Amino acid sequence: MRLLFGMLALLVAAPVAAAPALFVVRDADTEITLFGSVHALPKGENWQSPRILGRFEAADTLVLEAVMPEDPLALAPVVQRLGFVPGGKPLAARIAPEFAGKLAPAAAASGVPIAALDQMATWLAAVTLSEASFAAMGLSPANGVEPTLTARAKAAKKPIIGLETAEQQLGYLAGLPEADQVKMLEATLDDVAAAKQETAKLMAAWRAGEVETIARDFARETRASPVLQATLLTNRNRRWADWMVGVMKRPGKLFVAVGAGHIGGPDGLVAMLKARGLTVEALP
Image (spheres, rainbow, N blue to C red):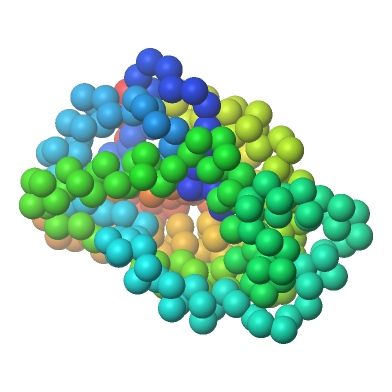
């Protein structure tokens, strides 16, 4: 589903340097730079402009949605515990009949056998098929914003803070009601055919700094599932905004990079920070 991977992946061939949106919240002794990131990108995407890197280099601390373990296999036991339901109902029996015909082609394209997908919780099956779809378009988390910023922060010996843990993020998905997990899977199956064209539009908006365009697209994606909207976007934004309000009480400079879908819109971080009395400035 593009809500999940619009936060994780946006696609189009790499052009000249992009100019994604940057915002700053500051007072006398504290400064937060807010950057809407993309977690997986095509190789060669040119987003590291002097404008962005200058703000990053001036910061004392890097803040990400989550600090991922260096060993990807470290999360395997968590995924196994939260994402597998051996002996569960086959996926084809969990979704509406009109989506059943789309399941086999999506599974074949992903390289994951239907029998293996059937053993997964519905949310994990949706994520697995989405990841395969984006990988087929040349997207990789290794090319995303976060690994680059993380490497730079480590080289500069900057502290790196996670707003959440990876296990928490998986728990949000695993905790969704089954009906909403099914909506995720059905939306994923619907999105596969149009994913390249739609994500290209989102990528163009990201490059141009059009956070409101991205927010409107995500709102359309989750219109059928208010629970999904609240769980993956609104509630997380609220917690993060509260955390940033607390940070403003202490001196320092932070560079906060979260998925671009969290920035704009009435439930986005910019609106929530303003509602809490902070002045948020869009950097030109």
